[in-house]
Amino acid sequence: MDQFLTFLQEGFFHILDLQGYDHILFLFAICAIYTINDWKRILWIVTSFTIAHSITLALCVLNIISINGNLVEFLIAFTIFFTCVENLFIPQLHNYRVLFSGFFGLIHGMGFSRLLKDLFMGMEFNAFTTLLPFNLGLEFGQVIIISFILTVIYCLIRFCKLQPKTISYLISIPVLAQSAIWMWQRFPW
Image (tube, rainbow, N blue to C red):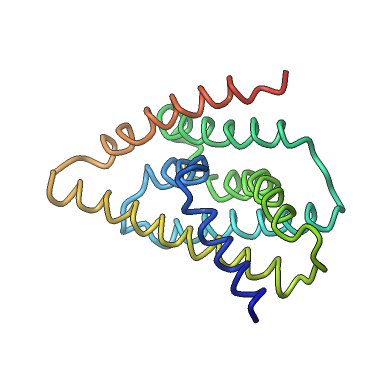
């Protein structure tokens, strides 16, 4: 039980760690075009992302697939960049966000797997005491982040009288700029 709780905490604190805020910015980019009334759509998008990243997380941890870590970090930055570009310039793709989110989840899962591998180095791997709790911790952290984002969006609409489109721009433009910087820094030369 101690190992389960340890990995649950590690997953939870990893997603909330401000040192690795690329995953947080990805969630901001995903949620930027929605309001609290879109909770069902957001639930489908996040579920798609979760299922996908759980698959690649498991496949990478079990050494069934392997990909260059530098390439994964670049691709994570690209997923954020693409989501912001979609938010700003390609609204006709919004209806396909569940598909994009699932595909991008595959990439993010590879990123999460590197931390999990480091955490259980030298330990006997057990999916129920390492992989499952780590993933549950990630998901719980994501729910907190998304709840925070939607609350902020709600307050901006309700109390500041901002339009959803304006909020999307206020979130997407700086996140786009940061992801472009990361893509440049992380380009696998």
